[in-house]
Length: 114
Length: 117
Image (cartoon, rainbow over all chains, first blue to last red; front, side):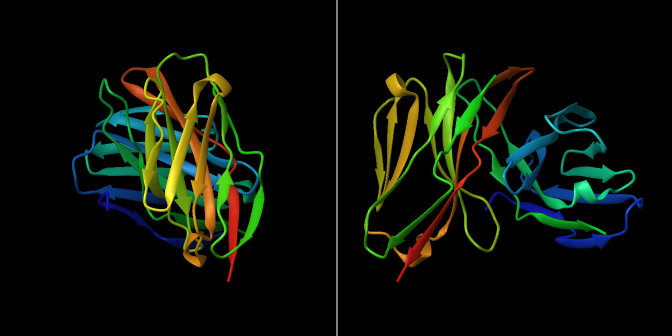
């Protein structure tokens, strides 16, 4: 158990509405990530954070923004949800060292945009 | 650029059979890390193993074993005497240093394993 909690776990929203997913961790991990999982694509990195207020884009960042105002919380926001953002979203954490890194995932958040 | 290929989209085996899941990777980095994750029907992603590029020693953990061969850029996963609880989607992933203290993780598309009783 990597101490990761995602909320909400399931959400249905309408096209054009803003949506925020929250990732909360309890073990002071430095790095936090948001991935999305889609059939035929595996998991793809949206954004990641390497510290409070330090974030960077991943492979599929368009249409998403993130914020990290506290070590324990990493928020993913869809400013105006679209049907193409229907997906399963996974938060992850890690603590990279010079010897490498292992990423642990949360339980996922199922988002449906109708 | 990094790439991970899991050519087997779906595999079905009968319980107690052995099964090998293939993973082939591409990277220009000399130092990298390989992973396997399990995603059972409940949906969570479970970390199984991490392998460093400089350590080609094979590993066994109970019924699970991993064969890492740099010469063929492969990191295959074998389940011996499969059980119904092994039914899941298995992901192979590659991580290499991407700067600013970060390692980028690239996933294969997964292999769905069904173990039939």
